[in-house]
Length: 241
Ligand SMILES: C[S@@+](CC[C@H](N)C(=O)[O-])C[C@H]1O[C@@H](n2cnc3c(N)ncnc32)[C@H](O)[C@@H]1O
Image (cartoon, rainbow, N blue to C red; front, side, top):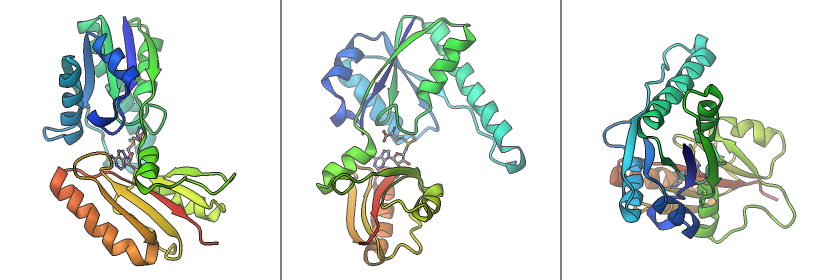
């Protein structure tokens, strides 16, 4: 059977022509169901409805977060449980399945690893391909009408929990993802271009000097969460010259 890993950008407005054509040719789409009011699942449902593809939801296994001493084992067990859950669905449904990936499959997403693991286990024989989508940093840059770096300079992308490491290593242009409430202590003189729920109806954008705009970011983040029921944010931080 065939699995098509499709980047759907930040939701229905960002499905490329290539992904739309691929979706129409799939028998069904598969997406994780994290909890009952998963707003991102609702957006995936809208994508499926638009292209006439049935959506099969896969309950996302619970992750044991209580025992940090055994963190690697807990994560490994969770990954295997996810693999088994998807494997069961593919085995039962057969045909050509679309895995709908938020943003782009190449950036902080485990779908490719899950599908590669299913293929390696060999219980369900699968072939797969990948089509790209618009990622959160791309859309952030477009909304703020910026280039992520100065002429000929590098840009560094990091999870928020490794921001300090990037700053200490001398990175000048840092895209921060996977954060909770932004923690930019010590970076008050840096510039920030921030966005929450970018590309959706509850989008919020703030830009300026970190020390000046942090309260505005906090308020905008709360607003996005109140309106959508969920919030995801991304930021570009630039060191002052
Ligand atoms: C698991 S990663 C997935 C990234 C995705 N594959 C991509 O290409 O952007 C989730 C993180 O992406 C960022 N993100 C995803 N969607 C976003 C959105 N609509 N607005 C702002 N940030 C978003 C946030 O930093 C969030 O914590």
